[in-house]
Image 1 (tube, rainbow, N blue to C red):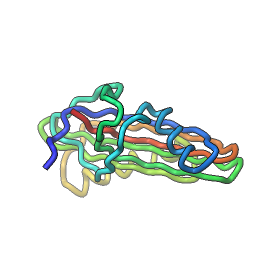
Image 2 (image 1 turned 30 degrees about the vertical axis):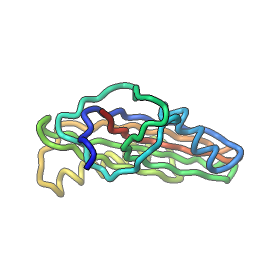
Image 3 (image 1 turned 180 degrees about the vertical axis):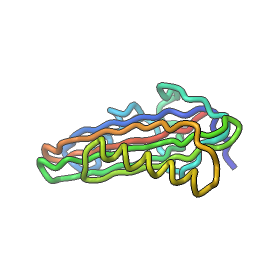
Image 4 (image 1 turned 135 degrees about the vertical axis):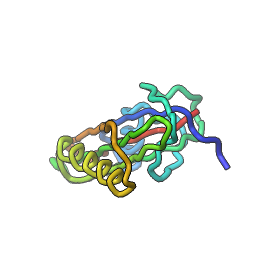
Length: 153
């Protein structure tokens, strides 16, 4: 079993690339998480986790991360990705929601915030605040939008 992360960073980035994978990699770089290994996780923020503005870990590290991403090869298409964290009592866990789609940044942000609020309703828990991060990208050739919550130590 892995240790429970004590920190989290909310991020988003978008970019173009010569291939779908390069566009994704470039979006990771734009978001500030491009030089680590992502371990995709489901969507629970550990209790008492502290928000930190940037991930400060060694390149190549394994990083648990919840993320939404979309890649498109349709020139002119608008794509967006967003994450939201629902936070209640500091001593309890939070809920992370991810979204991506062919829409605006505002629509993605609104959708993911509604998802976080619904998750707290489903759990019958009081919600104190919601943190949202979103990004949009107008595709030139091959583009990617990426939004995430990295959980780290």
